[in-house]
Image (tube, rainbow, N blue to C red; front, side, top):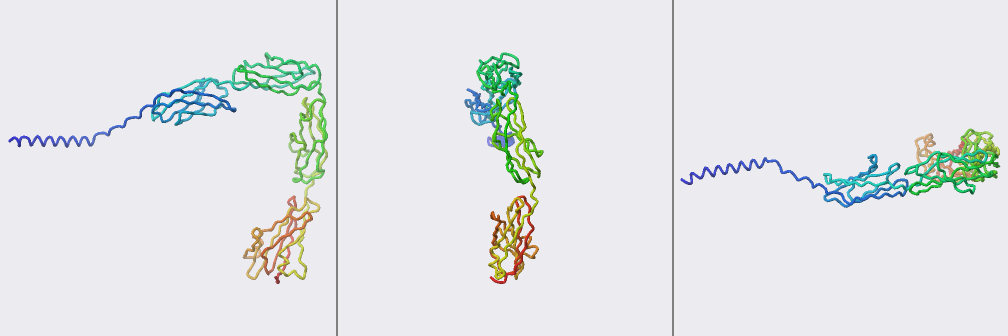
Length: 439
């Protein structure tokens, strides 16, 4: 009786267990825990150095707990404008940054580990490491010299720059206290080189050298110049103008500016420190180069150099082929070494001789390939001429030339020679035929 009463309860318990297992199987998966938020960045430090035009901004800090990366941002502390930045996996960062016009920077480092941690920032003044700079012009009336300031710049406040003028005549330096011009009366005519010394509030100093002040200089410099060669070929010959003398009453010769007008419509060229200036004329004609001289007082003079006659080479060179003697003209050995002569007596001279060779043999046409010194078969005579590779040689100073036909055999040989001069003119080709029946 007791057993019968317990059986239904056992069945109910089993059913409950099955139900519980079924519900468990469809339950939502357990969510992974989010990554631990990084701890704060500590001991953030920034240094600025200026090895060149840009600043090198460097930063270091102590690693934040649980951080895997750090986002670094450099901004203008005054305007908030971004200057540089990066994501790094270490605790240091450095960048080359243009900080012109920036008086203060802010560097912010944020630790990350999927989640962002608390950012750390440091603000620092941009040090004034540059001397001020300025531009100035000079002028004079009689013996009164004037310096005019046209620009004045500095990393710091321009109003705190002091200006001191040395007039270059041995008098004491003069403080320039206000305005954009300052005057000085020189005791005598001469050439004087004034300077302006600029000094900012940080003590950075720059000396600006100015153009010369030359009271009493009203005479232009003089010089003499030669032109070589006297005759030239258009587009080929380099014509040189050479200075043989140069002088001025106040300016040193090295301080006299020079320009060359070649007289052919080309642009006037500044003549630098070299003794000679060079030019190649593009068109035939007679030209007289002019040299323009200018001293430090602004006095100028145009001096004519010697004339040059430029001619065009329109004459074709002439090429000749020296034939073997009649008794051996049919022998292969007599044609393996081709001899010739090329001239260009009235032109620019022979630059090269080109020789082509083809041969009709029993089995067909062959062309000479000078690049590989081999004979190659061709379908027809025309194709042989077309595919032949010329042997190109430079004649001797007397005009003699030699070409070797390696691998020549019995057959009917055709040789074609032409000469090219330095100007690019090509001679009329010379073609010779030889029937080779003997070795």
